[in-house]
Image (cartoon, rainbow, N blue to C red; front, side):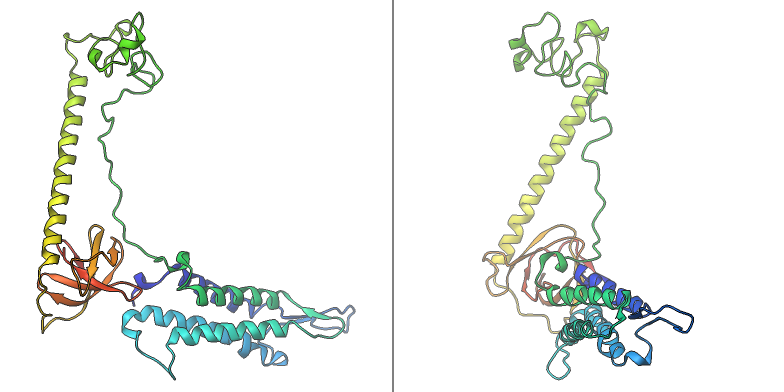
Length: 329
């Protein structure tokens, strides 16, 4: 059972099935009768009087949802399994449309004093959602998105404080002493010029009237902030250089002739730690045919040396040259 194979469309199908099951116990017919001899004035779909509403509307719709979800849970293993020429999810789509058709016809007719209850109307709404999600699950982009994704937690890009002054201190935007704002008695044109950085009222320095030390009298906080910013800039440049080197190495490896598939290779599920391009299967040097993103499991169907032939959710296959750091399922 692979929960990561479920999509938002599958969740809508499951929710509609639960709503349909609840509606089967609510009044389907209501009788406008007053007096002590009227007895029970409502009945639900489980009453034999309403046969065949129960099997043709409620049970057929629930069966359609079950077939669709079973197909999704089995994943790629059930991609080629068919019953009378159709997959389980295709049978589910057909059953959901047939149940909706029967529910709409059951709303017609009736006798004087007898009307449809909340169970009938709720069943029609549930079947509309069920049939729409089943038929449009592979067509509407919103319904195709995965229901469960494993995304890494976002980390802070800067250290606490970041070397910026706290609110209310000099150097805050709009206050005297911030970069681009002249200090008391300073020429506005000089305050915006980089040549005057380091002067009282310039970028990162307090104004003389705040009681803080001026340059040359010792400012350990400003020096530490500048060193932290330089260290961050150097680290970012190093990461960019490593990423470019890895990309060039992957491109060179993809351009080389690919070896034959390993004889003892067995398909397996894997996930990538960072977004990676998928090269064409027959021309590794060509334009990418897809992209692998973190948080989604993909099926490796073939191995070519250190590269893998991966399959996307829509069936597209391509060569993944950079397999470093992948997580096997």
